[in-house]
Image (tube, rainbow over the protein chains, first blue to last red):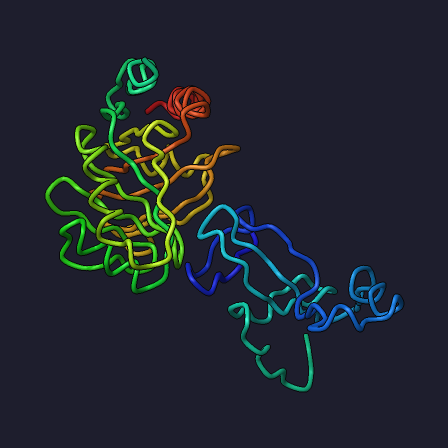
Length: 96
Length: 181
């Protein structure tokens, strides 16, 4: 079974987690000055890369916290996980 | 009336390796570090619970469920006084305190087959090094969520939501029958 490293609980089975979509999408700080196009981008448009993807995960059947992960969408390998609010760890040049 | 209807423990015949635990007072407490420290002091525990660990003293236990979430267990007759004591001690901190005494029931799984019975439907690694005595966590057993707490090398305290308990007990029985436990 795929093990996912929870920043709070350590390596835990995949079954305990749920996927939370793309990470690092900040809500506009001044919603009143945002154009319709920018709202569309914020609400609906997501990247769909073939490669490393920063995404949110929730350890819903464990500590119930959201955290962020870097995952390679080609291999399903988790490169790193880090707490919500932290910057993603630096990537080395080549990915597997 | 409601109390007499719901304060029962789970009713099923105890087996060699599984027995129902008596009703208990249970609270879920959420709050930041300062609030957690006040909670620990209110419960009279020697220290706070580290990640995925439980602390016990004088019949009261504090189980770490998440960075800001704790499960408090105490004897059933302390249900009123426990909430009041926690509420008084943590009044100056932002927190939430929810009485879940009747939401869940407790089982004890024990004996040399305990780990095998758990691992039949729970994918956690339960070796003594990966899941030592005193470790606790919320996890899943097949399709139901449980709180698993290792109280001794061959003894586990399991908290499960009341309505899921018959499912869990039946499934454990099936697993035991198949594996010859």
